[in-house]
Image (tube, rainbow, N blue to C red):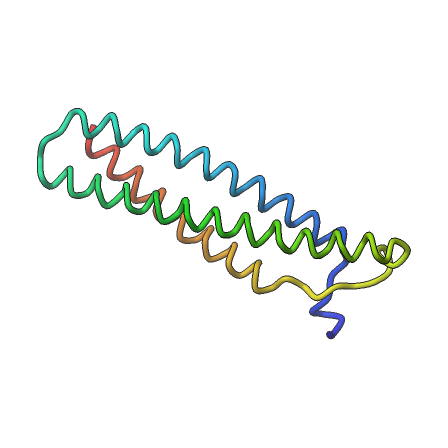
Length: 129
């Protein structure tokens, strides 16, 4: 482990908390988007609109699943860090840990994909109203 690939426990924990907050916000947003789609489906019978609506329903399911997996991965990593902290209480302020670049990359990728889906979703909703 090089110094550049290591990070303090408190920094890892802080990032986990930030990600959890962001992911929980997205879960709430998805629930709101699902309700919005329900409103739209009750207004339209056009096959084109219904096809796009179904596409976004599927996208929301996929993003919801990705959020669930990320939350699980974060929780697992947090448990590992907590276990280390319990076993080595003095070392936690001095020891540097492997940076969780893999998890960070997953989070950044999901953030990009989710942002793009939201842009397309809002575009669809504004055209459907």
